[in-house]
Length: 364
Length: 176
Image (cartoon, rainbow over all chains, first blue to last red; front, side):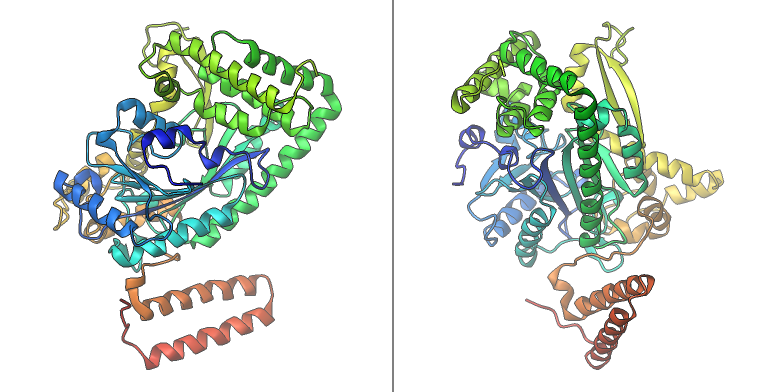
């Protein structure tokens, strides 16, 4: 993938994590690794003065030039983005809500292939993120680990032998690692077994969140599962434990799907096609409804029902149907009611194009 | 039913949130839902730290608490009491300044207080070796737990070799 040279280019390309590729892509949308780092001699972002943060931006971007992975990336300063553009980056999972506030010298560096990005002056000075499609923890870790090694010689990170990498919030101290998978679990939700699964996930020290991270709601049967602790275990240990548990969840969901299809095939197909029909012909639709309907269609695709769209189309809709994406594409602000109309049009067009492309027949 | 956020409009959107290992139902109006969907997050985790700390200082007397609250980071000037409020430390030095208060907190959060992950290159060769020995000790323990004694013996030999190296070259040599 060629490097995006402007916000516009970034906006018009599909984020790699939405490609619907990679192992278990029908169930695991994406895998993310995040590393938190701070510069030793500068107060943490919320206590630093404006000029100190400017200094962090400058030294981090210059260090990035020494990194093969980050060199020639696209640097977007939050102060130079409009509120809608900043929100677009949040919706793409490139920046956090916190960075989405453009008041301070903050920015994001997006690497050429868009799988790696570096948030600068978020809660921590650096938040390095690798975001890959499908279930690929080892690959995502190796991307982030390598970029971290490449930045390391040029930056003096805040580190103590005992506590490890020092972070603004003690919940991230140690490895500064957050490894997570975004996983789709419709059968466990439908069969009301999800509570039990989530409970056991939490018992083994992992954390479950909604689509947009911390405290965000669960929509479209999408769950983000991540490591909770960062001290006392190596990065590899944390990642392996997430990997193991995710594999178990995948198997549990697969078994639940098999049972569901065996006991209620017609009802499931009916649900899938009704969802598809609504998306294909709606005239006004809320973002949450799109996400929920796409969940049903995604289940249909995973069950190999013929005539539905590609995973990639569903993944793209997840992001393109969000408020800021709609408004950026439209070229200005829209009221929630206007958005619902524009959104419905976008969804219809995307699905029609996909049908045209694949020769699918919704009459099935 | 009225919206649980603004308390004005009727609640038309119902969703599930996971917080503190519990799933809970929330009922809100469309406008608040739209905003919440995208913006709920960022500021909330500091309250988790505050809650954790509140639970821990229960045992302290008021004077203890006041005394601890006045501990200040010599470098950035952050008061411990203000960390308690915000859940955020001021600079790298705060970890040393508040070490006695932070240690139980870190243990509560992570179940451990000792780093076992990667480290910056400037730690030098000596530090790398220390970490490597630490990692091998962990591996040794796991091998013993699995009753894989052949593996354990190999790991033990490797630890001995590194410890001998450490004894002969005690000064860490910084890498460029």
